[in-house]
Amino acid sequence: METRKRIYVGLLGASLLVMLALFSLIWFVVSNRDLVLNQILLITLAILAIIMISFMGIGIIAMIIMIVRSRTIPSLETISRVVNEWLFPITLLLGKALGIQKEKILRSFISVNNYLVSSKSGIASKGKVMILAPHCLQNSECQHKITVDVENCKECGKCKIGDLKKIAHEQGAVLRVATGGTLARKYIKDTRPKAVIAIACERDLSMGIHETNLIPVMGVLNCRPNGPCFNTDVEIEKVNNALQVMSKGG
Ligand code: SF4
Image 1 (tube, rainbow, N blue to C red):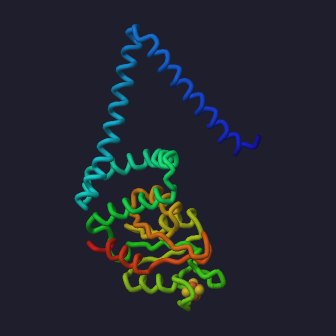
Image 2: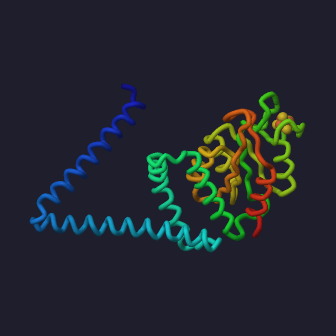
Image 3: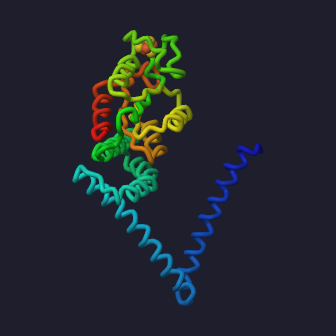
């Protein structure tokens, strides 16, 4: 087996062994409750579980309070972000088990994220906001290399890249068009924006929001009248609104 495959398969096997060891330990401790050492272990496990559950509870309650008050609580932002990160895959699994469409859950996640981001004040000053657009927004017949430099767009009106370029110029934002996550990450690393307005589908947006969790990201969903990843569209009004929110304190 190649090294690349060996790493993943090896980690899968190791995960199974860790789970087995954990279950065996719990089984041993529970079935030998009379031993003093096991009683200590049981109490330790119970304390750890209480700490974890309390931590997650505080994170979720903090998020609910922030949504209700329409204002962030800076001291609780990190804990709610970490809890959100941990519980995100579980919410997707639970949603699947309950028959809730994955896209619906992702849309709800993006909407909560946008709400929390918009409730912050003074997010970024002019010139520090990046609009990150997907390459599929460009008209498929256009020959101009806008991923290299968006200034190559001639604003012919056949797609929304020209409009995005216009509002980016007007509002002093940086516009970048990325072909995928790797290029998007490179743009963020090179430009170091204080805030990002990302345009993408549900899946890419939620992944992007998770990955760039130290920079506020406002997600704007694209429209896909021609199916996924081909001649997509975006409501410029929504991008404009996001720009106003991001620059409100700057
Ligand atoms: S608006 Fe710009 S990117 Fe879109 S088709 Fe015209 S020149 Fe190409």
